[in-house]
Length: 598
Image (tube, rainbow, N blue to C red; front, side, top):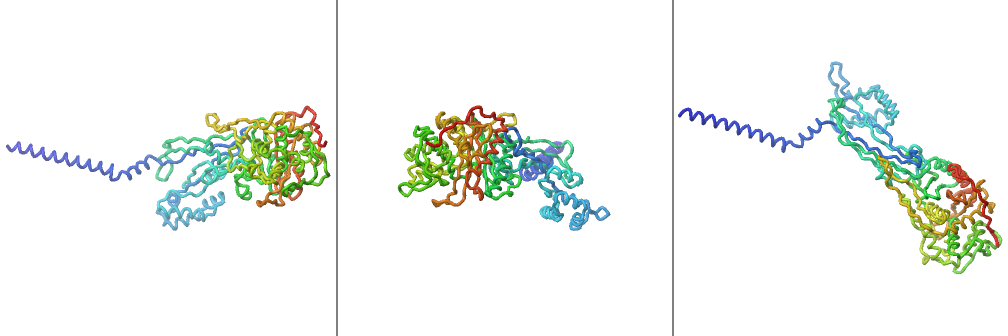
């Protein structure tokens, strides 16, 4: 009987022990999985390793032969470990000095003086970084000390072998050609986002995707050998391939700067267009921003390409569009003529004049373009339907943004004929009362010169991916604007400008047939009048017998030489360089010889 009771007692005790152990395990499990879950997870992550970012570099922007206009380079930040830096200072018995004394020792350390000299940073700035980090965390191992060091600086700092200083690399943006193409390329802001130009417009193409790697560190923060592991690979951005020729852009930059200073002008812009493809080979301006230093020019020139954003009354270069409309509709021929005085007075107070005095002449339409007569083009075109003219201006692209997808592109101003007063009905024929950008004007002249067919302008060939595929390729749909015969006739007529107007003889280029139109326009004051500020411009095509390239130059507010022929030498030098650069064969036919008077 006693044995049975003893067995039951032992069984009960064993059961109680089992229950106690199970309860203890359940409690421990609850404590781990619920009570201290977040803390233990963080501790586990810390033991797994330190995570650092692998930067996916922003893609390059290149010209048409691969020359880098914008690229990513390695820059280095140096991170100090304040605790480790101060632990080196002891009292001679191996005991750490009080923090204030250790900081004073660090400030006087020759190595910090060397670091200051290399980075051109005061020692007191370094000490402020240490103090700030220690104030936030008395055991801090993180104090950013040096930012965006280039490779030479990195090498000098590394040569000091400072144990408590760790470099961290990251990509930064660099513009090797500076202001060459700077007005088109744009720049990247402090957040790494494209701020202007192509950098902004093609952010999706260019931006990379960051990755991550982890490593296990020793107590002093040094990575343990063999512990580094990439947990997510970085992805590099695409390469944006432009249509630009960087050498040609450099040449334009130099020429525009020289001419602007020579004429005492405020600014100048120029462009080169491949007539057969619509590609923009050069688009320069002066002043032009250097994306490496956006404060190098006044604010108005930092963020926009004037070619697309700056509107102006085109003046006499617009007469070619009016003449093309007249010829295309059969309203006039190159031989159509009218008695042309140097001023015009019409009903409803209409008054305007030519730029210079001349006797009454019986000018042909060819002569009107050659002499750039406001009166002549208005006299000959006054009975042509204003709606017809408007429709042609629209077909030439006036009043609409070009197909180039560029930030802040202006659409110009071309109001409907129903809103034109008597004066505007006349002045639109010679480029007043209408505004356009340089991009719109070169687009119009491209169509005029390309057998009458408009090929949309393009600035980008596409975004080249890592596997070589090209995305974001612009879609191009050609549109006929004028007849083929009208195009040829217009070029023949415009040959008279360099060949028969002595004021424009500087436009001529030996060996090549050249068609050009000059223009002088005033700046509107916004109240129906004009300021005494002038734009002088030239638009020209060569060679006439096989149109290949279009050059446009526009000079803003010159103090010296306010007539369009002052821009002729600039045009001549640029077009000569273009023909040489692309090895364009000289003309093999005689120039046209259309009469300029009746």
